[in-house]
Length: 236
Image (cartoon, rainbow, N blue to C red; front, side, top):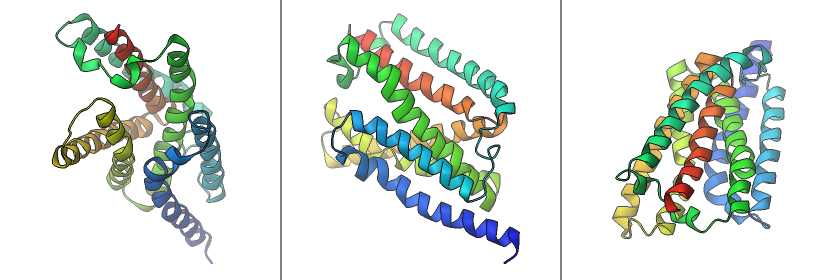
């Protein structure tokens, strides 16, 4: 078999296996793991390592995966600038009394200092940001970019990222006693998936324009970790 055809076949197989795994992982698998919440972080970090190994075996380069060390500085510049914008937004919302209730989240209200630190320093960076960025803006985007034009690769990766958030959205709605009826819940989940898909487009463009996975990772980390701290501050 011609080398180019063999490479394409390996990437097709990787993509075909990865899509259903990602669609199922966050919605059907990870919440069933024994020993949660600690096992959640371990499982996600291990899954990120497996995905990177599979991507390399399929012939994807470190540069395609956004892990070329020569692009790290550019990724930090892009991601750091975006993270600063996010921090300013949360700071503004906390400073304006009318906006502060928008940050409230019942899942955060009961967290002690140690639990909050664990979320910000361990669960979010490792269990969420590392895993999701490797999976979506690293391996999936790199594989799709071998098979589709840029817009198609970004669009598919963003759509899967949106669907990844179905179960987390349902959990957030239940915890905050929102959207009680089935139609209201369905509408809220649809809006949340569209919103996270739009975020997926932004993250993917950051990854491609900077050449580094560090750019979307820093924005993702700022959005989630600072958002959790802002929610805790809003409750207190």
